[in-house]
Length: 205
Image (cartoon, rainbow, N blue to C red; front, side):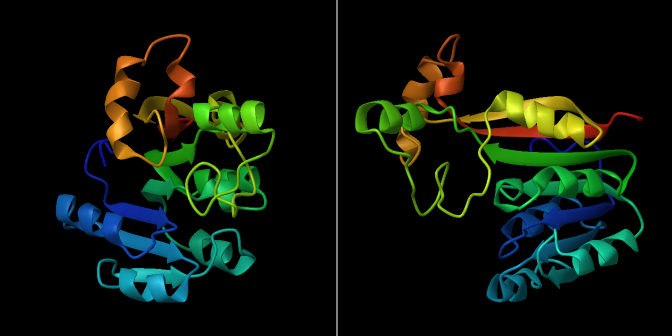
C-alpha cells in the first residue's frame, strides 16, 4: 500500500488470497473497480467479500490471460509474492505490463534469496533449505536476488520507479527487524533484506 501513488480506479490484484489487501485497497480507494485473481477456490470465495469480482484460476493460465486481455486497461496491478511460483514469470509479467493503462503502475514483491539464511544453510550445513513458507518456500519455482528482479522487470518492458525493502536478521522472527535495521548498510544490506518491493512503470510512459 505504501508504494501505491495517486488514486487508482482500475485495480488488478494477482494472487489476491483471501482478500485482505483487497479490503485495504477498497478502504483507501472506495470508488475503484478492483479485480482479484486467486487459484485456491476457498481463498477465492473469501476474497469475494472484498472484491467486486474474483477470477478463480492462475494468472499464467491461457484462459485467465484471455479474460484479462478483454478487460479495460488497469492503472494498478499488484503481484505480491506471486511471480516466484509461476512456470514462466518473465512471459507472464510481460503480458501483465501490456495491460497497464498509460502512466499505470505495477507493484511486485519478491523474496530475496541472497538473505543471510541462505548463506548459512549452504555454507555451514551444505544443503539448500526447503520450508513451508518464506524465502525458501518449497513451492517456489524461481529464486531472485535484487539484480535478477531488476532484470525481470526490464525484460517485461518496465522500469523501476521506487524500491522498498523488508528487513529481518532471521526471516521467521519479526523481532529481528530491529537489529537488521542497525546493520542496514553496505556491504550487509542485501544479506538482511528478506523481501524486495518495487513500483514499476512501462518504459514507454
